[in-house]
Image (cartoon, rainbow, N blue to C red; front, side, top):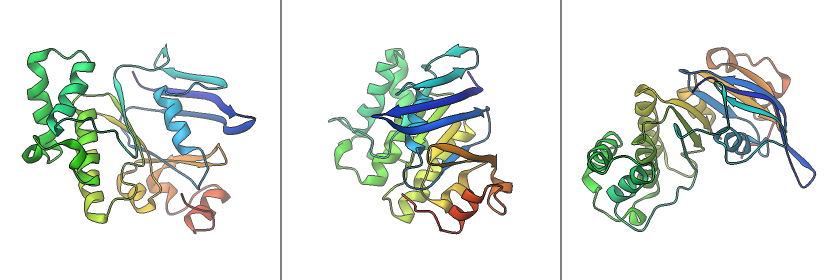
Length: 234
């Protein structure tokens, strides 16, 4: 399925250029973290990659096939919990994906165990804490064994403890073989989880480099200003 290639993609909405000529290649393996100031287009770029929106121009190409794929999943900043138990939320996702009935509950329980949620499997999903709901959303996505997992600011508004728990689940999914492509407004999180950094500003990709090189010495003046706190965060 990978690499995923973006070729001069643009998104224009009501005359406003949200994504402006972005070209990038996402290879299997490294965790790709998308950062940038408020209004940079991070979430829109993620939705474009996932196939939720189509480019106004340019191309999105999955390893020789166009469009989205059933081998990818996405977790949003505010995931939707169904009116059923935490376990049933995961089982439902497997049913929608046409996983054989006999496999659904064992796979769901295994995913919840990896997320540290097995002890609350029968609790209603909608009464869980914000951090627990986000881990449940990750378990629901991870149970599908996606080749690529898109994450849109998965720890926004969570306290440090809940953030660490969510990051641990993300790392476990990555170690299980999934490619992680993620946006974050948390620079520390980008340092902890990122293998490569994509820096967006005003809809343009200003820099795409290894995290080890990006943080000590960004190549672009825009990224330097962002790291110094001179551009607004989300």
